[in-house]
Length: 401
Image (tube, rainbow, N blue to C red; front, side, top):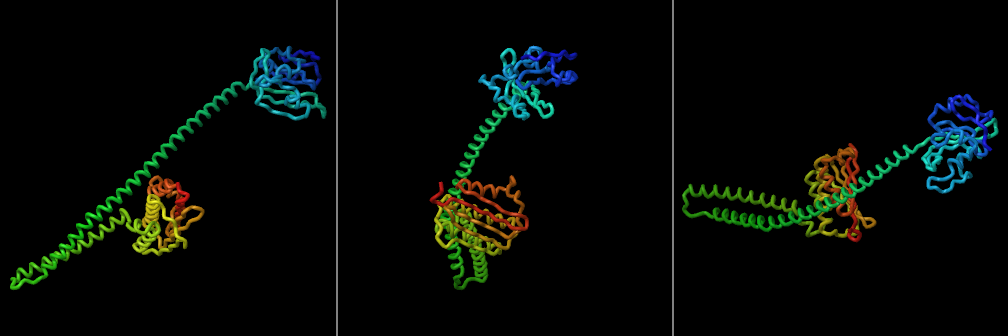
């Protein structure tokens, strides 16, 4: 049954109920939020002008009517919303306040608007007399949130597309880098063979000619004038100097050939080449070597992988020689669970971890790229004053791509 309205100097419609004091009128009218109260039957006992305006009614038309069936009867999709599920009614049925921003209220013209509302029970001592509801039209906020979500989704989509493009470009770049590295190794091998076959043969022939010439000059001629004998001796000295220069050239050519393509790698395999390289490095730098490999034979890697491991190992030793100031190098080679593990540790000065991530750490970047191309990884552990440890992990042939 509708409750009669009491007059209000502020044009607020208030039910004739002693709970509602007319002095609340100015307070309720001063807010832009909608506010209404309901009794235990769900009937409206008061509503402020802002609330009535948002609902599309005059305040007098709302008083005494069931507010759930008037403005909260359906969900946003139009499906029925029974009052037994209504959080507003549960505020006084269960004595529980609530705050909801995921529902809609319905206007008198049948349109709906997104609403944020809160419902609190009204107590008269220990007795619940009804509930007071405050609500606010948040259509603009919802639209802004939806627009923000759309923009976020579009941004995430663009970022995802760009990430995929960059990943594809990075993959192509790595493939190109690997191809260039293979071409470089092939060219090194070709040059090494040509230097060995052509220049090496020429130096050997030249050394033989100089030896022959020195031998002929050493044969004494009968009754030669003293001046001729002196000239012959000077020429023999020149032959000796030429022979020493040729020997030095032969040694340099051998070193260049070894740098281009270590013959031990072709003749004795990767593991012997690594040990030879470690021995050469530590002897040249007067550094102690702690070398350890497993007792069982290690499988030979395919030629490109073997060369990549050898070049990574060379770069590891080169970094020690340039930066570490170490007195001892420890090398460990092991295999476990189909993985090759190569560890190189020094007792040098070490470096902060960020030093190996610097943009100009080209040696480290090269090692990592070689390892990634083979499906492996390179880990670096170092701290100032604590030396440096590098660990290369690669899948062994049976597990290699």
